[in-house]
Image (cartoon, rainbow, N blue to C red; front, side, top):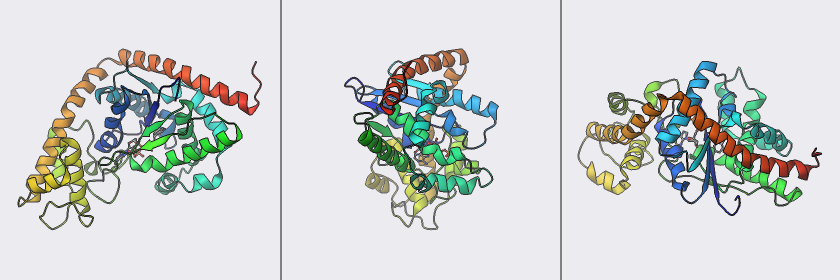
Length: 332
Ligand code: ATP
Ligand code: LTN
């Protein structure tokens, strides 16, 4: 809460091409708060370097992620859209929060366990303290709600623990945030291994539908999606592939699960998969057109980044100033 206004904050890493998982689990839900909340949506480039990045790719994806925020419906005049590394208070508060976060807490984070297994040759300290930088992102803005996919819930819960611990020692410093996870889009699964999360850094491009994939590619990927040997379009845990496709179809069409089962009763998987592909590509068409237009004017995107980081800095400075004072750092 800042000046009696509730705050929404979230972030996406520019670590790959954004997927429909990012769209349905996160981006699409950001705009729900634009009217009633003060909203900060950040491109978290500092988080992305916990895994090795090619500099040219990182730069391009940072522009693209900002353009996608806007293309997905976030009006830069109603939301503060910016890049994390442009607001140095994030890194500064992260160090302070490192001193209020326990080694055991960070060791329990499942994302750390997964990523350190995946990047065994580069288990760096940043990968380990990733959640304290995320806590700094959130707490700097006195955030009330954090719209995320379910995989990030554990990090937001750790953020709450850190905020409560800090507030106990130094009362009234931080608002304690709530994670908000959408019920249907919270975990879109890989099309190749439907028990695994769809992830933008997956090496198998056929397992992932990107927001910017063209219609033919989208339809081809859904056609190839791994399902079971049954033919019935039914939402059941023992049918993870079909369950995932029903979820995706439900997210894009707004139809409820029983209605979808009814719609595809007696037709084979082929027809159903085609319908999912069509619904998906149709829903993304507007986003893709807006994205192309935004990317054709880099200067405009840079102006927006500048405006966003200036707005964000104003809030970040206030919280960090309060924290520094409470800790006993000398103000000159
Ligand atoms: P990476 O593969 O680089 O770890 P990612 O695809 O998991 O990336 P993030 O940048 O870590 O994406 O996530 C951005 C937001 O998208 C987060 O709120 C996250 O919970 C959400 N998200 C990511 N993947 C999915 C998914 N498959 N289903 C639902 N939400 C998702
Ligand atoms: N950790 C998140 C990205 C992220 C984020 C945040 C999300 C960084 N800072 C603050 C919400 C709020 C991820 O890996 N998806």
